[in-house]
Image (cartoon, rainbow, N blue to C red):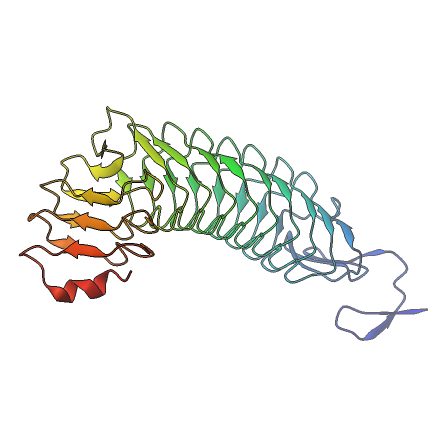
Length: 334
């Protein structure tokens, strides 16, 4: 009886389900292609896939399951230590994945657009994860992050539209660019004490976020981190923070020369006077402040960044200072 060979040709005499072609190359009835300990490709047709633990697999290679929309469940055995870039990306019907405690590294885009994933438990000893890890996982509602994790990567949860809350592990010190951008259901986030930096647009368009608290360790905040956060009503910062402070509910740098954020739902006031001494109004600082009709600027203002007043639908009056001119109006579309 003949069977189809590795490259689509007929071969005979393959009696065992697992054939060993040489010391580094295995093929399990063409289902699992393994080279030098790396699972290169899954070629099977099962919707529930258990990766074998007897083929010498140490890592799951790039695109090993890429765009396998037929697969619904994947079980990774103990002993595998890493998952490469794009390994499971665009597995749109993948609803369940078991990740063992032996995994210590997961690469970029590994689960991008796995739109049926609802719950993921990352192993506790996992220290390094790539960017865009769960980007576009639109039905993800429950994620357990590893206690050893130190960084939330760029775009890690980008457009995870169903994610309602998240607790950042205690050892995390930085949150990357757009890490939670577009998480429109995110209403609760808990930051660790050690967090010191937050990248640009990290919480952009998190429209259900209402309250944020920063510890005294936060020393670096990127632009537009709360851009289009339409429900944000309160930001608090430890009084011992040496980099940032709150003035009348708005977020400034410590010396009061930079205005970062006026929370969209701060109050129902229709007019706001920017404090004297402010020189820069940051990107998206007043975005979606629909209650404001008037903003009064002090003579000290020199720079208004892009989109500073974006989506301020009722804003009717901004008086430019003598250090500015009408050309600035193009830097902040309303």
